[in-house]
Image 1: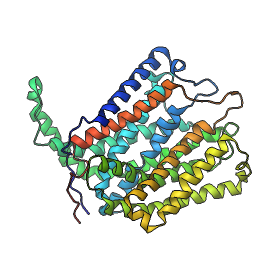
Image 2: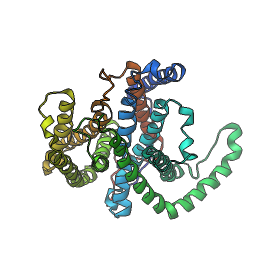
Image 3: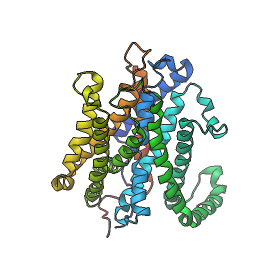
Image 4: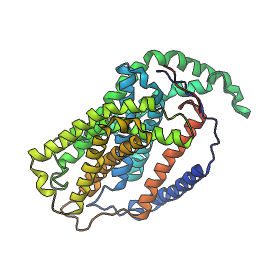
Length: 401
């Protein structure tokens, strides 16, 4: 099946977009306060609690939920399943924007944000953080390169720069022509590199917590935490594609593309089943199930993550009727997305309890405002790109077999 994406002919400034702009402005004010007054001025982070929702949501969850980019690329381009091409560009856009805001979240979170470039110069092969930083940096550049053909398709032959920039029209056209001639021949390299790089740092994010056995709750601390992070990211890739595609096509009144999304989730049954088996098997082998009934907030968060975020949607997807229903498929995939998001928050925030910390961490209002502002910014840019660039199919435009 092939897709024919085009810019969406719909008004950009809608009430929803205006709300996003307001949230972005509020988040920008909070970010400004963070850089003027320091991290302590806008957050409840401390020496004992150096990680909060900026890492748990903006970074760890952002990386995991952007996995749809490499999972769909692997399926369509490497395995040759071109039937799923209609969802590749939306997934690529989500991944590109997701990783962009991951980097922005890191800039806000680290104390010396002006030194974020140093891992590129000062290499430390003994640090997991170094590997994560390098992989994220390279993968983000790969995503930008993979997005260039969409930019070329939008502007090639239509470059019309305003005012004094008009003299650059021919130069820009030449550059677009070169990109159009060269990139298709070497894109296979970037697709493979994207899959490899993404798998590397997805697992390495889990490796970060292996050095904290006394700080992370036993329900989450395990030697196979890197494997759990990798398998959960792969498992959430296709549900995230369903989630964002359904939201976009509903709000823009487009073809829901159920003929693509429904069979796509059949892979999720297998992938999520592997993650569920590893999760339960690890708990049984390490006998950490003894903590399940102690009634603490951490245990309740684990049960919520496992039951509502993994087991229930997995059972739902086993039903062909659920996979054929747009509403129920969206609900199942939303539960999976929420389950992986909750897992990352649980590992980095809820389950993380340093022995020297006497108080539970709860984010400050300005902390939450920054995170909400980032999410609003991502949604704002997504709406901008699908409105003015060929990402989605236009209303009434069917994909052809």
